[in-house]
Image (cartoon, one colour):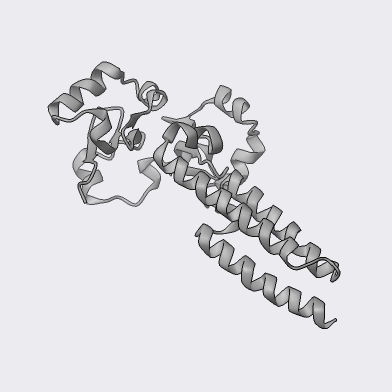
Length: 224
C-alpha cells in the first residue's frame, strides 16, 4: 500500500508539472493533438499505480516524452501556419449573413441538432436571430446575433444598425490565407494592392484582418 501511495503522489506531481509545461486550457478547449496527449498521459500514469511491481520510471519517462513531443509540435505550428492547419484544422463558417451553409455543415458532419444545441448553450433560441456562426478548431460553435437582437451601441446608431460578417484573418505570421480571401469575396489582387498601400510584403505582416467591405487591420512583424 505504501508503494502505491508513493507512486500516486510522485505521478501526481509529475503530471501537474507536465500539464503546466503544456500551458494549455480547460479540457473542452483542448485541440485534438493536446487531447490525445492528455488521454495518453492519464493512461500511462495509471500503470505504475495499479501495478506496484512496475518501475516508476516506466511511467515518468513516457510522460515527459509525450510532453516534449507536444512542445516540439507547438513550436513548429507557431512557425508554420500550414503545418498548424494540417494538425488542428482551421475555423469553418457555417452561417453567413443569416444563411446556413449546408454543404459546410455536411463536410464537418454537424447536424441541425448540434447547431440548435450550441445555440441554446449561448442563450439563443431562435435561428432567425443568428447572423453569423463559426466552428472553432476545438469544435465549439460561436454565434453573432443580428444587430436587432444585440444591445445597441453608439457606433451601431451612427452606422444605422447594419449587420455584417465579422473580420477574418487573411494573413497570419507572414502567410496569406487564400481560403478566407475567397470566403470574403476578395482576391490576391486586392490583397497585393492593400500590401502596396502599406509598403509591406506578406512576409513582413504578423497579422492582417479584413471584412467583406475591404476594411483592414494590419500589424507588422516586430511592431511590439
